[in-house]
Length: 131
Image (cartoon, rainbow, N blue to C red; front, side, top):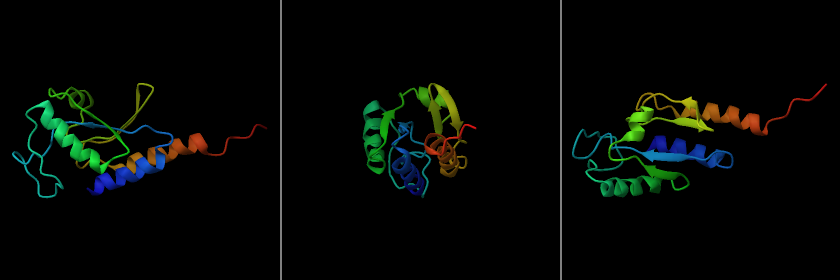
């Protein structure tokens, strides 16, 4: 939950210049599988696309300003981007500009914040003067 709060603050601050997208992949700690005690949700393993849609609706409540899409049941996005369990990316014009570490330990919102701050400075900072 704290991670989503930090992420949500970034969304609020940078949404004028950046499109945020959450790709909901398979549940890392389903309530009927490898359970953790720090999960704010009790979501069983997705057995169908409908299960994944229901779980995604719960997630969407925590990030209402973000677009949310679902990975396929074959988990093709998770596989392609090495996202399992969770991962942060910045993609610009089809090029990966930032790739965070794999979660949970590599999921560092502070690194993404640093990247976004530099990007914001490039967009809105003082322009160099011609001499």
